[in-house]
Length: 192
Image (cartoon, rainbow, N blue to C red; front, side, top):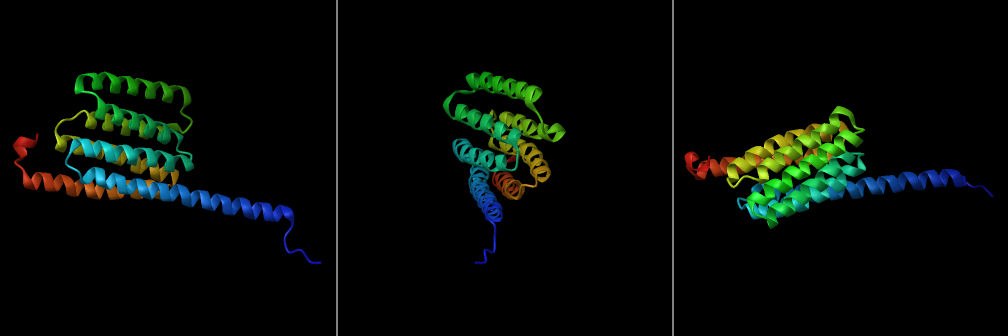
């Protein structure tokens, strides 16, 4: 009787198929996060920017973790917590909580950063997001998101994460369009 594959070969094939399925699953999660990101960037309500951003951040963190973006996962987790705090507390208490979260993230980076210089980009992004989420002015909030997006694009490229790159490219396009609409529809002096 002829057996075309040995048990070891079948195991290796199964593992490769399993890896491909996992990759596709994490990519799908990343693509769903893009949808929530776009909804966040389109919104002109701070509440909905934060709610859609929360879902986007959680799903993005899960997706990026598959590409060994553990700093990205950690920062996404902290960013999700700060978005929940932004929804729950007034701005004075919120400032204290957000500053405390940055201190925690800095401590994490000092102790556990194994990604090298590229691992600092999620931290830079988080700082932009924290300052953005503290803004009451929607235009300033969205302008600060640019710094976050550019940090994540570079991080996604370094990890070869297509969903992360697409997430930020689409986000950049929609955010730019959203800012353009705000500027077009309102007096600039009232916005700044």
